[in-house]
Amino acid sequence: MRWSQLRRLAISLPLAILAAVLLVGINEAGYKRSRDALDDLSHIHNARTSISLLLQHMLDAETGLRGYLLTNDERYLEPYEKAVASVNGNMDSLRDIFMSSPQDLDTVTPLSRQVARKLSEMELSLRLYRQGNEEAWRFVMFTDLGKENMDAIRAYSRTLMESSAERSRKSQSDIEQSLLLSRIGIATVTVIGLLAFYMYLRQAHTLQVSHEREQELQRDERKRLEELVRERTATLTELANHLQQVREDERGHLARELHDELGALLTAAKLDVARLKSRIDMTSPEIAERVQHLVEALNSGIALKRRIIEDLRPSSLSNLGLITSLEILTREFAQRSNMEVEANLEPVELPETTQLTVYRIVQESLTNIGKYAKASHAVVTVHNYPTYVAVQIQDDGEGFDTATVRLNSHGLAGMRHRVEAAGGRLTVSSEVGKGTTISAVIPLTPASA
Image (cartoon, rainbow, N blue to C red):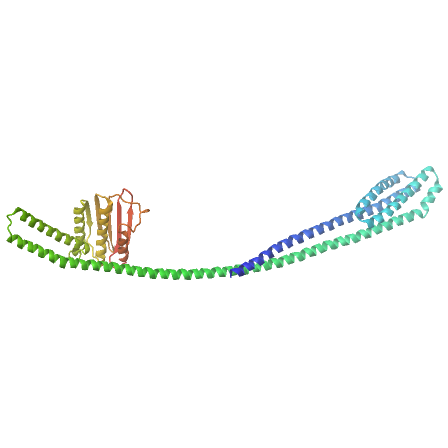
């Protein structure tokens, strides 16, 4: 697909460039040709104007001279003199105009000689008239020589006019060809442009279809990955819950074993020591000290067993309820850590598994406070709301930076999993030097979760 798109792009782009170059070339060629044709038309117009002025001035000179010779009126000499003065300028203009055309220049040369002869004839007639030689000027004036000169001038002028007309037609033809070429060029460029635009539309449509297909594939892949993540997450959550339940079961089993087996052994040993104490001689200080030390050791072992059992599986939780168990837990922690612990506990009805979750959160939080916080005061709060219970453990210890300390440290990962498994949410807020607050919101029933 990408190769096909690149191939279409490799075709449409040169087409667009070719169309642009072709359009510029056609416009430049048409412009140059039209400009040359317009220049020729301008020269032709000037030539026709100069030829017309030449004939007009020759007629004006001849008419003015005849009027003066016939009437002896000096007023006729003024147009004659002006016409004669203008004829030379007309001839110079014609030579300049036809300088680039050797064929027309061959016609201008005899025309110039005929004009000079005609001017010489009229000047001779005027000079003879002024000398008083009437027969001579009448002979010059009424002979056919002047008519022949004028006929020759008209013939050469007609030739130049026809040549100019032919050049004019050729220039007009060039202009028409330039316009036709421009039309053809514009039409060609339009076709090429439409073709390039059509290819661009096809390419855009192909790209759009390809993009939509890729998006669809990405959506399917993302959906598949999300489904896979959900399955894996559900599997891991189920496994974590199972491991947590197994852990609690193992704790309960170990607590029962310690209570039943170790408790029985310690109790039996204590009874045996009591029997021995009544039968041996207690008058000896050394024996009395040894027996007393053994009794105290057995009592410490029984207390340690009881504390370990309560840590593994608090019997007070099932016998006395959550609030009483938390009161016992906070009181014992305060005694062991020599710390002031304030308990604000509201009565709450929770399932057994949720009660154990709340108890473990408080227990783990107090353990972390005793190990790391270096606090002097702690507050344990349990608030009962209509649909959920809020648990908060707050201390005035050293605190930590939540941005740099991983939240899975200090047993927070286990607490977070317990809360989320119960359908709740755990938040941890702490600042260096301002203590730490652990808050958990747990729904009262699984249905509410």
